[in-house]
Image: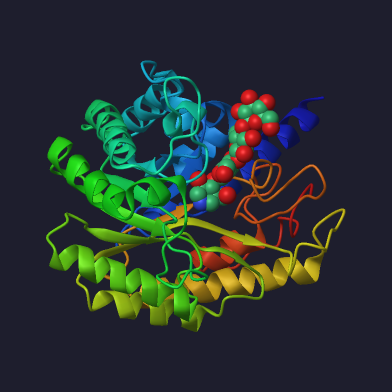
Length: 361
Ligand code: G3I
């Protein structure tokens, strides 16, 4: 009995030593940039909270600061979920990014409707109405988190490379032209003069899209619109885009003297929307690890050009990449919140022989 007890104590000490031997992401990248994760209130307790406290020094609300959640009716704000996240960040000495103030998705219906519930038509009067709603929203939300949020995604996904002028035909655009962009940045600056103000988009490695984005950012800066940075979402997969394209994109925007961050990083194991696997297969996980390694090597080499890297989730057990019809495994921690091969590749350490390749997936 005594021997069994001693053995159990030794095994538990070994397990503790192994946990302690896992390098912290935040510490590893301390000299480079804060490492963030997109979260919800459920992540502030349990295993995800433990991962967050050890590996991340920045968070962003995955959904809880979006318009539909935080401002569901014209005179109703629902701050409780975002407040809980801000409190978690404060308690754990983490930074917080804010996402997002003007987007074409996750908006409440009232935002683009008149008092009778009819869709707003593009008139001068309705343009003024929508801009005043935007201004009020930003004053309330940015004002509330002025001491918590250090960087805002002020406008999100405004570029559509399929349009001749590159502007997405969102309700914002259809009702205000591009004036909503100016209003959003100017109001955010006024309310939170110390916050970094970002324009955020996906596929910024696409040459046509990034040129439209570049032209817009250059124009905003020339006209004195207070924009500080460009966010590259980076929802990538194990094949594309090439890391070299990302480096090229970052170097392009360096010319404009803007801050740059990776704002929504994850890496799907799928090449296209048709594939579906019951579980992640080793070749794909190895490929994912190699691609993450290549990306983070590039990020290290671009020290000073990238001021933040945020993953779009904590672990594979909660990711927008998984749907009812298929499961994906795009993050650094697996379903049991254990570090994957991709994690070890990112921190640049050998994966301990004792750990299975991707336990429990
Ligand atoms: O909360 C409701 C729940 O009450 C309801 O029962 C359920 C029914 O479908 O929906 C729940 O809301 C969902 C929400 O996520 C929270 O889980 C929405 O349907 C769903 O559309 C929403 O998806 C979010 C998506 O943005 C919406 O566009 C994802 O979680 C979120 O990860 C994703 O994040 C975006 C970034 O904001 C911008 N860049 C792309 C990125 C990935 O799409």
